[in-house]
Length: 267
Image (cartoon, rainbow, N blue to C red; front, side, top):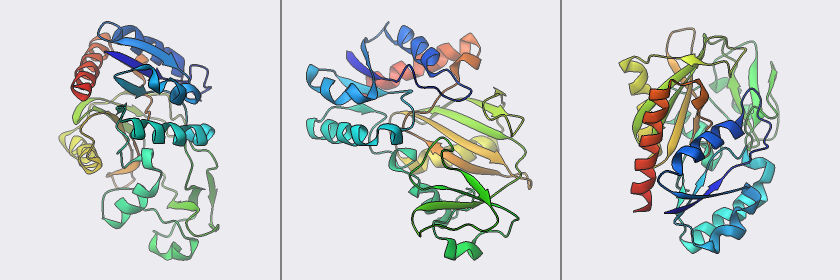
């Protein structure tokens, strides 16, 4: 089963080493698949070479190569080439509209609007987080007491003094592990987290909402002052997995789950 593995080994991620994670994953996946690695800008031109599927991993925010990514998506769909994660994701893969949709549907998410004229719909707080609607990785994030910007161009959320952030990692619909950042100012200094049944029910609600039968997903949440979890992000395009922080047995379990998922996806 030949796979085209898309990664940017040189991407300078803040507080993370993307290349190490992909070197580890490809070294393990080679036991079951024939692998070719390429930069995201080269993925489209390599599609006709007869790969059974393309797996998109740590390639950085696509806004850095949006035109190439859009062209790759179109080419893969036209050729019927399976892409993992599947291109039908409703989370970050499709932009940030899901934060607005989930807010409107009453899900436990940080309340979000995209029009400063609707500020009264949000909780009244001293400051608001404002970021581009077509953004990623905190690029363009600002905090202000008076949000502005064109309607539909920005996302506006109340700035929450949360206790900590926590991430839940899934392969398909199966929970794998959780990690949390005890210090809110140090997002990528992560430690093991033992989720409660309520925590897992929270995370699984968003996995179910996304309706991806196959794929790697990361549900990012924050613990609000009231004690409830609120969704920060539903990452379903190329979520970083922090595999280097896991015990060997958890790494092995994750790789086994990913291998089964890829085989089932291709078959």
